[in-house]
Image 1 (cartoon, rainbow, N blue to C red):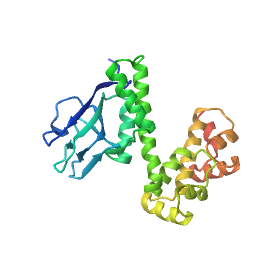
Image 2 (image 1 turned 180 degrees about the horizontal axis):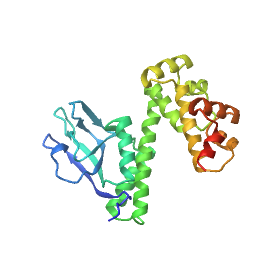
Image 3 (image 1 turned 90 degrees about the horizontal axis):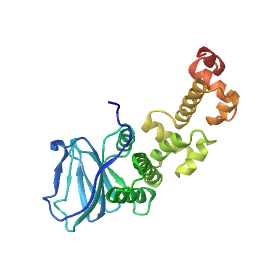
Image 4 (image 1 turned 120 degrees about the vertical axis):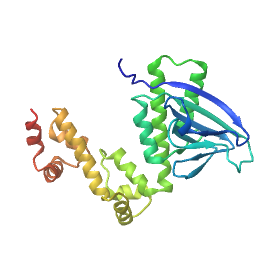
Length: 267
C-alpha cells in the first residue's frame, strides 16, 4: 500500500478544565503517534518536557506535541482560573511531519498564536471545518494544515525580531538569501550594529552571517545548475549574487571548479 502523504485532521474539540485531574503523560498514551496542537483560549495550562523543564501555556499561546513523546501537560497546581482550550489532532503524514518537526526543533513546544494573527485565523478555520465536516476534499484539508504549520512558523520568526535579533537574522538569511540583501541592511532590520551582529551570530552559529549567506546562495545556485539549463547570469541573479562574476568567483573558491565546468560534468 502506498504511503498516504496528505495530512488530515482526526480530532478537534473545545474543553474547559478546572482542576489538576486534567493531566496527560504522553509517554504512556496508547493512541497512534498523532500531532497535537492545543491552544489556550483563556486561563493557563502547563507543558513539561522530558528533562523536567516546565512551560506555562497562557492565552495567546499553544502547546505542540506528539502523543507518544516523553512529555506531560495539563492543568497547573497553581491554577486559579478555568483552563479553556481548543485542540486539533493531526494524523502523522509525510507532508505534515517535516514541518511540525522543524517547528519543534527551531522554537520548542510552546508557541505564540495570537487570535487575530494569520496562524490564529487558520487554526480556527481548520477547527471549524473539521467539526462541521465541510472541507472540499482531502486535498483541501491537507492544504489547510500545511498553510497552518507555515503560518505558525512565520509567526514565531516574526516575534524573534524584537526578542532575539540574532535568531531573527538566522531566519532572515534563510528566507531572503536570494534577495539583494547586505549585512548592513540585515543588521539594521534586526536592530543591532553590523559589528555586534557578526560577533554574536558567529558565537552562536559557529559561522559568520556573511559566510552563511554565501553558502545558502551557492547551494541554491548549484541546484539550479544541476536541474535547469538557464544561463549562468540568470542563475547568479536568482540566487542573490550581484553579478555573474561574483558568483563564478565564489563558486570556484568553494567547489574548485567553474559553474560551467560543473554543469558540463553532469551532461
